[in-house]
Length: 86
Length: 172
Image 1: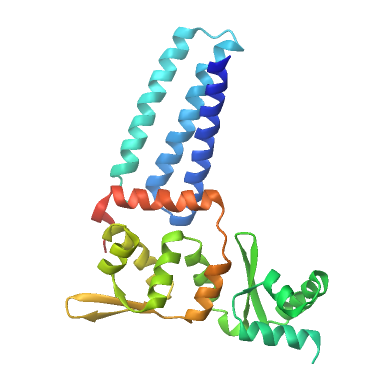
Image 2 (image 1 turned 60 degrees about the vertical axis):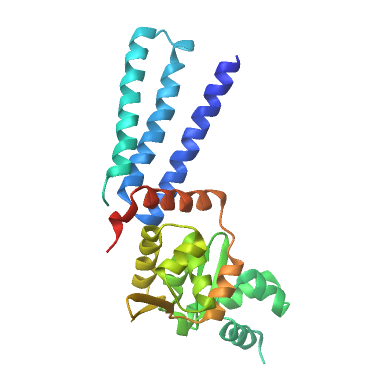
């Protein structure tokens, strides 16, 4: 039970950080912040997918692969956000 | 003097006053004040804009200045820079030291303030010195009334963090 509560908290924080990034992008127009926004959103999606097996019959093996791919994309997005010129 | 003339006179004396403060200072009811402001705005005597949950009201002479000013004060670092410049002229290094931010970050914000037409810059030896181009009293009044939301504060810090991470890249 505690793991579900923690995951919900993580998803909530990821969504909040996505919203903050959106506000920052609207204020500054910096494209690099859009990559951050996408990274936070994907992090929330990844966490949601990791918990899907509790409500649907998706194979955990498939979810593991998708989650790992998402982790890679998230790291790439953070990297691009830091190095990208606006 | 009619209510409307009194309101207009008060706004002319206090450009950038908020709706709530105007209501308090003149002792006019909210509904009544709303009606008069609507009429004054319709007649083109005043301009107003909502920001951070407050409505800022300016006389029509501020038609060109008020939007850039409100854009600038919606950013925490730009607010701090404007308040520092209200103390007197400063160069970028001094501002960066006072605000404990990198010069690249300050440079980014100075460029925005310059584009908005709120600051002047002039060469003084090897330095560029910045000064305020608009009324100090108005800036201080508007900034003192501004209450940013939590996500606004966090967004401003995120912008500064991104600028710091990328160092001098954004320097013009």
